[in-house]
Structure formats: structure tokens, C-alpha cells
Amino acid sequence: MKSYDLIIVGAGIIGTACADYASQQGLRVAIVEPGPIGGGATAAAMGHLVAMDDDPAELALANYSLGLWEDFTQVAQIEYNRCGTLWVASSDAEYAHIPEKIARLAAVGVQAELIDGEQLYRLEPALQRGLAGGMHVAREAVVYPPGMARHLLDRARARGALLYSQRVTAITQQGVQLDDQTSLAGSVLVATGCALPELLPQLPMRARKGHLVITDRYPGLIHHQLLELGYADSAHGDADSSVAFNVQPRPTGQILIGSSREYGSETSQVSMPMIQRMLERTFRYLPALRQLDALRIWTGFRPVSADGLPYLGRVPEHTNVWVAAGHEGLGITTSLGSARLVIDQWLGRAAAIDARPYDPARAVACV
Amino acid sequence: MTQVRINIDGHALDVPAGISVAAAIAQSQRPFRRSVSGHMRAPFCGMGICFECRVQIDGIAQQRSCMVSVRDGMQVVTDG
Ligand SMILES: Cc1cc2nc3c(=O)[nH]c(=O)nc-3n(C[C@H](O)[C@H](O)[C@H](O)COP(=O)(O)OP(=O)(O)OC[C@H]3O[C@@H](n4cnc5c(N)ncnc54)[C@H](O)[C@@H]3O)c2cc1C
Ligand code: FES
Figure 1 (cartoon, rainbow over the protein chains, first blue to last red):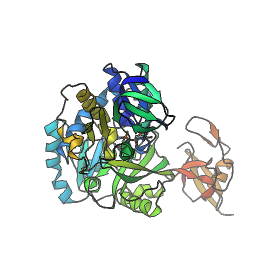
Figure 2 (figure 1 turned 45 degrees about the vertical axis):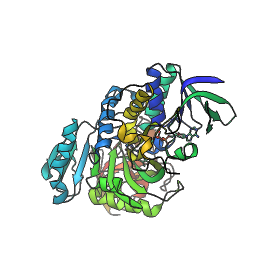
Figure 3 (figure 1 turned 90 degrees about the vertical axis):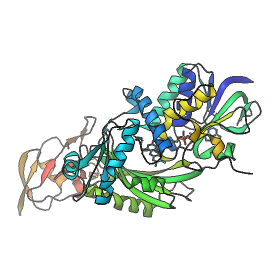
Figure 4 (figure 1 turned 30 degrees about the vertical axis):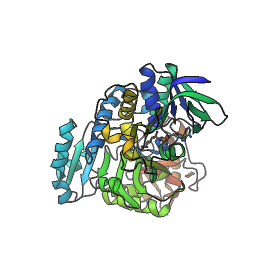
């Protein structure tokens, strides 16, 4: 039986980030993925690298990760574009909350500035008139997530990591079993996103569907990743379905339009009523988009843990099984920090940030 | 026949009212448009299917010129 220090299951952004860091630390790594690299949630994502200040643990992990992303800004296939984030306030009440947000971000070292109505239209002339202002986070960026997953895997393979293009069918005493009955021995790190319960049913995971629309090329129409300040209510609320204004300029001049959130829809089929809701929301903030041509619509599923924070660490009752999954709508941003948190614990080192909020033990379902 | 005056890439052109923007560009006897990778492109289907005839019209890019009729004062940019 082939033996490794670490067998990583799943080559999304999380599995590949773990493979990259583990191989860098000298571990002998195998990674198992039956599909394309980064072909799951990672391929569906918007690729916005963003710090959200609503939950302290989430902010700590995002901020730690954003620092690590700085090493990748020059890699062509990642299409790193530091366009900045512009959060838009639609009411005076939303505007009034911005200073608190700026203070929470500043406390961890993220610089954000208050933008008044006049400055808002100087930054984004296409925005609907009558908005109160906003918050500008200049150093944030957008990337092409599957490109990053492939880049991370290439680096790991250059250090000797081995890719098995198969499915893990079971976790065994020694390691894992693959489709073709081969067994691999070693510690196991499960990074299968929404599919986590197939291998670790004790860890609750829900899939939260999202729709995205991409337009033809309209360079220069918008310049920043634009979000409504109410986005966090949609992202962190538990409604069956919600939409929020969230659009992104791609380096090609195309405009990527999000975002919807929906529980209970199991198929990847596009829902036209949901698209309509999402676009009506978008046009309220950016009426000029009404006239543009859309090229493609797709959906993806965000892996949502019991409390919305990822499971990062050893799985209770197992000595040799680890998990890194459940990043909901922030897994591209938080991938690099998540990988370090898990691998550093595997190595018996202290993690760079407090690892307790992500300990899988918090969620193991009572049997 | 009523004529309208439109502007294509900075050049004024008088064309019959009611013709398509694609037909007007063809009358201008200039290269039709270039793709983002620099290739020459021109209308192919003439009926809104192939998207080969996209140009910028009055500030809005990526419009199928075979599907839009000329209007007096229209501004067309072929490589927009
Ligand atoms: C519409 C949408 C927009 C998003 N926008 C953003 C954004 O702007 N910014 C951001 O930070 N995040 C965003 N996200 C979130 C982000 O995409 C996810 O959090 C992240 O991709 C999760 O990565 P993952 O590696 O855990 O999962 P995945 O990418 O799904 O990877 C899991 C992999 O495991 C493999 N697998 C499953 N079962 C097995 C098995 N038994 N054996 C072997 N392999 C297996 C799958 O094939 C898959 O490739 C968005 C998500 C969606 C859906
Ligand atoms: S020529 Fe085919 S769409 Fe216009």
C-alpha cells in the first residue's frame, strides 16, 4: 500500500491550498480528486477577496488570509486585480453605520474610508442617483478562483505531491479507499466542500445555491467590486432565499453579476424567477446594466457548516482524520489562512490566529 | 428617400432612413470592425444570431448592428 504523510480529499481551492502549504512544509502529500481541479464551488465563485466585519472569527481568518494572498498578485493565471471594494449605502441609516464598520476593520488592520455622496459618483458615475454614500476598501481584489486552484496544485506537484484522479469511497483505519479499490495509507484531510457528509456524516453541512450572470465586454462601465451594505443581511441571514446587489468588473471588461442565496434547491438548474429578482435588485443600483447583453448564467453551491464558520482541525473520535470544509461564500478569500490553520495544527504547532472558533468538535452531531 | 446623418468612427455619413446600422457601416466603405484579439470581423447572418456585427451605438457597446436601424445623429464606434 502506498503511504503518505497526508492524503487530501478534494482539489477545490481549500484542498489545493492545503496541498500547497503541506508540501512546502516538507510533508509527503497525495491529493484525490475525480473531477477537474477547482471544478466544484471554486469554479462557480465570484473570486472577490473581501473582509467582512460582521463576525470576529470570520474577520480574523479573512484578514490573515488576505495577507497571504499578497504573495500571489503577480501570477498571470490568477488574474489578480486590485480593483478595491466599494460598499454602497442606500439609506442614511446604512450610511450612519459605516464608521462602526470602519472601526471594526481598522482594529485588525484593514483600511477602509468613508465616502460621501459626491465622492461616490466620482468613483462610480454609473451608480443610481440618490445614494447616501459608501465605504471604500482600496486594497481588496478579485481573482479567477479555478486558476488559483490549479496554480496551488502545480506548486504542490512540483514539490512531489501526487494527484489521484479518483473518488474516495471510504475512510479506513489506515487511510482511504478509492473507486478502483486501491488503498492509500496516511493521515486524511477531508476538503470536499458540500460533499462532506458522504465521508463525515457527523459534521452537518448544507448547500446554499447561488446564481451568477456574466455580461459581454463593456470596459470602463464600473471600476470597483460593488456591493450594497445590506449584503451581510443576505449573507448571514438564514432566510430560505435572498438576493443582494453585488457586481464585479472582470479584467476583460465583462461584468459579473451576483448574488442570490437559496436553501432547499438541490439541482444546478437556473431559476429564471431568481435571476429576475437578482437583476431587479442590481438595476436599482446600476440602471445602465439594463441595456447590456448577458452571455451566460450559472449556479453554484456554497458549503455551509452548522454555524457558518468552516470546520478546520481534527475530527473528534478519530486520531488521523482532519477536516477543512464549510467556508460558505468566503472560501476563496479564506482558503490560504484555512490551510495554514489546519496544517500547523497537524504539525503540532501553534496556529497564527486563535483556532478554537473553527474546531470541528463544536458541531459534531449528538448521536 | 429621406436621408439621415449618422457618425461612424468620427466620420459623418448620410444614409437612407430605415436601413440597419450594419448596412450603413458597409456603405461607409471602411473596414467593419476588429475583434478583441485584433481580427477583422463583419456581419455574417444579418439576423441577430451570430453576433459578428457588434459595435458601440450611442455609448452602449456590444450592440448587434444588423438589428438596429439608423437614427439621425446616431454615434457609431466600430471598435468600441
Ligand atoms: C455563486 C458563488 C459565489 C461565490 N463568491 C465568492 C467570492 O466572491 N469570494 C469568496 O471568497 N468565496 C466565494 N464563494 C465561496 C467559495 O466558492 C467556496 O467557499 C469555496 O470554493 C469552497 O471551496 P472547497 O474547496 O471547500 O469546495 P469545492 O470547490 O466544491 O471543492 C470540493 C472538491 O471535492 C471534490 N470531492 C467531493 N467528494 C469527493 C470524494 N469523495 N473524493 C474526492 N474528491 C471529492 C469535488 O469534486 C470538489 O472538486 C462563492 C460561492 C458561490 C457558490
Ligand atoms: S450579422 Fe449576425 S448578428 Fe448581426
